[in-house]
Image (cartoon, rainbow, N blue to C red; front, side, top):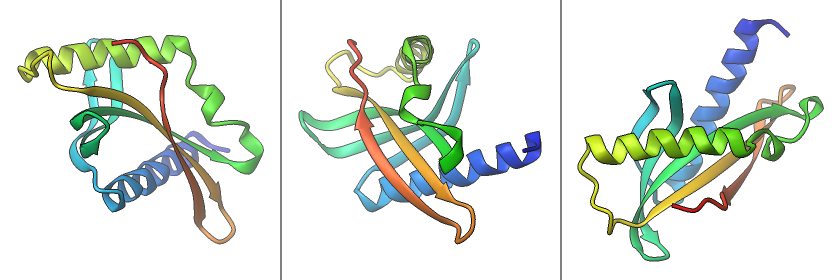
Length: 128
């Protein structure tokens, strides 16, 4: 697989994840947010979060069936980078400490033959 097709697959998976989140009532705030060497794929608001309107930092992992588990690709180091970027995002955007925050992952498994996807959505076990 070439680098270009890998990026195309990732971009396609991110689009699928956004469509999935919007269908489930999430409101897209930012996409591909980068700061100080860390990136968050999607930042959304969930108006129906467990504790009311929740700010969610979402990692997207896209895999073809033969590339292994998307869930295992988000290790503790990746989570630390997401937390770092989320912290800066909250500071820069004056997000109050009382705002509920969630760290989430959307795993997209693509069938390249018929261009369909199976999507799984998880809350990442992260301390604030």
